[in-house]
Image (tube, rainbow, N blue to C red):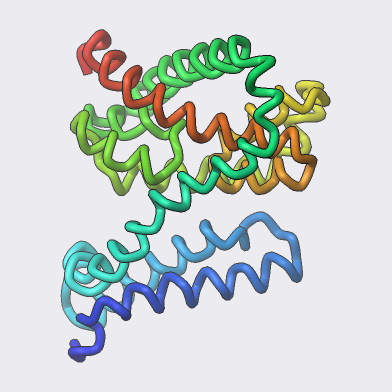
Length: 240
């Protein structure tokens, strides 16, 4: 392979190029499969597979040698991007002060239920122990879920894919789910979108209103904190 493919900028250009392309198509069509994160992920994987075939290498080798150096540069920005969720939260901290008990209780119960459901579904589908562990932290945003998954013995790449798929599904079905479950109340809608859709769900919540956006932001932040405590404990208690 050409030396240019080994430069970290190669991974950066692939990621931003496909993301920008997905963003263009998504704005034009509003078709959920063009959601930029999902679109860039699928095209990126296909590109690496094609490069592996042409170069006589495995996709894993191409990923490690050509994409990962640039991908790691992008991943570094996920942490400050996650911290930025504090901005809409600060703007509506009046709601947090008034409803903090209900918010914490709702998120904690939601995480416990989510982990039980994910464990049951993963085992029913015949996933390995690593596969099951990879699913446990998917309720947190990607920047938190990936290192947490690795820490408990899961596969960070599988976890990242699960987080992105969550976001795509919520963006596609969010309006319908809110209608079906009658989530007209801003706090419930925001917490639900932030918990299930992470950054993409929070962006959608902000479109609905400042209260929904603030609740989605606090969901993303608190889920990350709670997951770091609850996921390892749950994995140990379930002998995973």
